[in-house]
Length: 136
Image 1 (tube, helix red, strand yellow):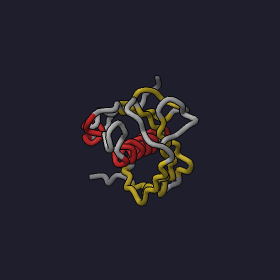
Image 2 (tube, one colour; image 1 turned 45 degrees about the vertical axis):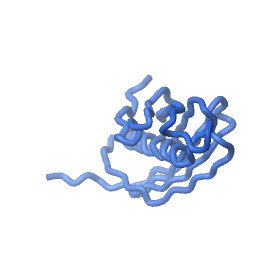
Image 3 (cartoon, one colour; image 1 turned 90 degrees about the vertical axis):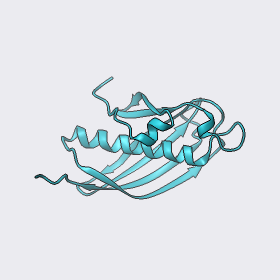
Image 4 (cartoon, helix red, strand yellow; image 1 turned 90 degrees about the horizontal axis):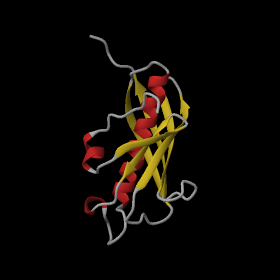
């Protein structure tokens, strides 16, 4: 694995999310099923799925920025999540794909799946403002 984005925020760690792999240079985030992410019995809560998508998108943006030699901060502008099927009581994965990385904005698509990456349980579409860190 290359020098991968591995610093996950406290929310991700609270849900036992970890970087498990990479796809095309983007970190793949894994989240095990547990009571803390359960909604209705035997299924993932939509908020946990959305959180996983958000963490995957953030990781992808930071990885893309770092590849360009930037340590800029990002600020989320908006999020849209499409739920496609119920998340079952098993390991869930997500990866973000930066579809546009401009000077001030980044657009990301994130996909969450369980057994088959080609059968997503949810898709997220996020936009981030890129702000250079202030010196001094």
